[in-house]
Image (cartoon, rainbow, N blue to C red; front, side):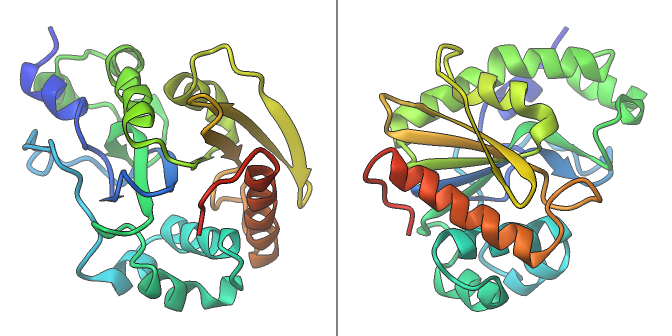
Amino acid sequence: MVNNEFAKWATGFSGFDGGNPKGSVWLCGFECAGTPNEDDLVFEDVTTPGYVAENRGQFLRGSQYNLKAVKLLAALAGRDTRDYEPFFNEESCFNRDSNYFKLNLYPIGFKNTKHEHWADWITQKTGFTTKQEYLEWCREKRFPMFRDWILTYSPSLIICTGKTYATQFQSAFGSGTEKVFTEEVAGKEIKYFRTNDNKTTVVIIYFLGTQYGLKSDEEISLTGKKIAELVEKHGEFDIT
């Protein structure tokens, strides 16, 4: 049986670095990186989003994903990827009043997405015997929350990172009836569709990192510029 405290936590602002959901640009990953710890997995009140305010330098230095994400957002805004740190600070990325919001499809962080990292103590805390049960519950109970947020906050752009999980991103942010388009940039495929009465563009790109993802500044820069073109192509959106 699902733990009620977990269910409440998982259908709130959990598993995010946060920022401003009212911002025009959302950046969504699959799940948080890290090794789950029994003492740290606490189902606290997450009815309001967290945000990156203090230790902003550590936010950039502590994760290749975060570093590449900020470079991508800088390119999206028309900046040179080498200016990622000034951009990050000037725009207060992922702060409470910024134009950016950082989230994940699933709330619990793992070293990687392999199911072998599901432990007995996680079962005791959540009520799920396997990670597959947990993922299926999230798709049923958590994903509708994302779709409600799109209607409430109406972001102009949602960037999803991880082409392998395109189906999950489409399920979280779309109704299932949207036409999905495909483009290519830097030798890598981009999928995108429009939702929320065409007010929101959802873009699914390669993961930010790993040997199969976006690695170089050139790839990241070209991808950011291509996303800006796709958004502008389909309407007047505020992404800066």
